[in-house]
Every structure is written in structure tokens, then in C-alpha cells.
Image (cartoon, rainbow, N blue to C red):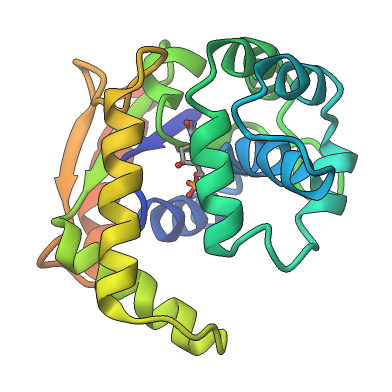
Length: 223
Ligand code: DC
């Protein structure tokens, strides 16, 4: 079973992807990591994030091992990493170079320790539209920018990262604009995606709402 979960930053994709992958014993592919890895490598090597040729080269040479190594860097999840990822993800050659790696995972999904899984949950912006257009279940998770900013702000505070709610809201709006206006794979729901607005839902409510669709799919396919 392949499940895709697309949507803007801090909409609740990761929460849902983690819960569904655990419940149904599926591998979890956080596709934002591929763009964060390339973006961070550009930052660490002092290359401008607009340099498409170098970004393409880094994307072509990206492996799961290298991504896992880069993910240990403090800026991988910081706003520096997020903005660099958003910028390199707008470069068509980077997206093309990272597509196969993401699509191949659906053919042989594995858990973090390398053991095979019987399916995968993809978390991203274009996983239902471009990466896995024939996924079994597609979700498009969203929430209003103020709610998403508050969620992200609380995560930063919990991690001891100093910032303000206004700054986080500004960064979210900036990323939303770039992610949805880029020419290559702009953020949008697949026509057959199930749309969930989580603005007024807590994590448990979001998971329960999505799980109804997964159970329905499994029921239909068991007959
Ligand atoms: O989900 P995230 O915050 O880790 O994503 C970082 C950036 O990567 C985000 O601004 C847009 C980009 N991205 C993308 O273009 N396509 C994806 N499937 C996942 C992420």
C-alpha cells in the first residue's frame, strides 16, 4: 500500500505520516529531506542556492546514507535549512534529478534499519501529483497560516530555538508563496486527493479523520 500526504509546511503531514506508518507497518519517506539535504550541502559548501548546475550535481549524487549524515547537522531542520530547501526545490533540474530516488523507494520500501516493508507513506508537496501519481490513497493536508505558524513556533520553543511568532508566520508565508508559485511541480492537491483541513483539529482528530479513509480502502480491497 502506498499512501501520499502532501500539503504546506506545518499542516500536520509529519504527524499523520508517522501515525499511519506505525499503525499499518509501512516505511516512511519524508521527501522534504531530499531538498533539505541538497540545500544544506549548498550552504555548507558556500555555493549560492541559485546555482542550478551545482545543485543538480549534488542532487544527482545524493544517497540515503548521505542524506542521513546531513540530517544530523543542526541547520538541517532550522530555518536556514528550510529556506535553502525551498529555494533549491524550485529548480527544475534538481527536482528531475531527485525524482527517481523518490520513485524507486515505492518499488522497494524499507524501514530506517533497512528491513523491507510492505508499503510506504510519502510525506511531501508533490508526492501524490508527481512522485507517486498512482498511489493507493492520497491526502492533501492543510491548515490556515496562523495555525501552522503557531504549531511551528511551539516546536522551535520546545527545541530551545529563539524566534518570534511573527517571524515564523512570515517565513511560512514566504515558503508557501514560493512552493505554490514555482513553475516546476507547484504545491497543489492531486485531483483525486482527500483534502483535510486540520486548522481546528488536534493530532488525534487529524489521525482519526484520515484513518477512516485508510480503513475504507483496506475493507474494499479485502473483498
Ligand atoms: O517538508 P519540508 O519543510 O521538510 O520541506 C522543505 C522544502 O522542500 C519545502 O519548502 C518545499 C520542498 N519540498 C518539495 O518541493 N517537494 C516535496 N515533495 C517535499 C518538499
